[in-house]
Image 1 (spheres, rainbow, N blue to C red):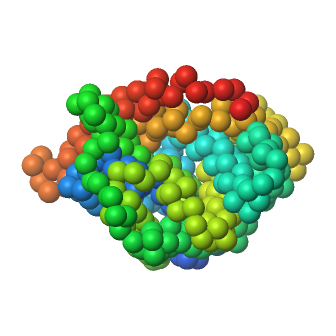
Image 2 (image 1 turned 180 degrees about the horizontal axis):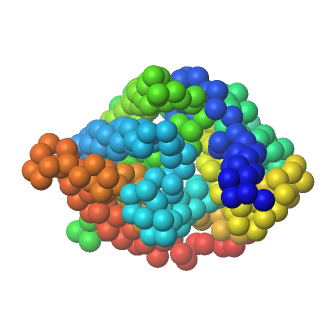
Length: 439
């Protein structure tokens, strides 16, 4: 066998595998697909806790952090979109491929993959719980006199649809699910702020910090900082979404992708700012950590909003699971030399969904843990890893605008990475007394 024949055969084999893997298999997405996917990935159900985070931050710092996070994450997202095709003729379809280009083959993998896995698996577990709890709230709102059912069972009900949906092969095949989810996120955030306006400013409203001690105020501030910062965390799937857009040297994929991102960010602003500011303005520091709880009435509307949250979280789960499926399938097919087939996919994905469901049922207080994990891994992947890669690859001139912008984001990101977990850890310690497994 001639060496070139061997290379041709290897290339053909690699291409066949790439055509089978979920992220690289289908490259015919439109720019609006990327808009739906980005909205679904970014607008988490965490939006409903924004007024509560505002209460921990107060008016001044709260508004500044909300707006600053929006600007910084939009900038780092632009960097990711630009870096997707910075090497002519090559596309970095996955976050870790970009990491390997910036930091070297081995180091890039070790820097990016563990963080990405923690983010994606963590978000999936959190969404299992959010989905289950929102179903439970729906049930309790519609039928207040029914016998209460445990959260664990609702998580199982929620997971049941993922055992089916997770077998859709790639990002383009879930664009319908993603569109429904993006529409729902707009719907329930609009319900949250319009119902607040309808209730009006409460007569005994107060905007002072709730904690009585200085230490209490500081820690609440830190944990609220984390809540706001991780409201903007779609960066872990952005290259994977861009990989689905067709690209030629004349029309690179960054054009349509950027259009989708800007559209998504406008939607994010329409969702986030009214909920955070109006929710806090109307209820002050008495707002619950989920604003739908504060708005008990009208009952039918709150029930609908909880159902919308469920539909949105179904879409978000799939968006964050897809890169994980890709990672697992790449490992099985390329490293462990399994044959790419439907059976392999069926087993891998079913096991993954079952795993996230089981952990969700085991630790229903995972939300507090996510604040802690989020601080450690969301901050790097969203706020400063893109900037470090940018500096490593493009080497902007010292003290130039680009150099300053990147170092500012890196400093902000590192401060976040240190402070947010401290606040979250204290929340965990305070709530640990009430934690029950399988509650």
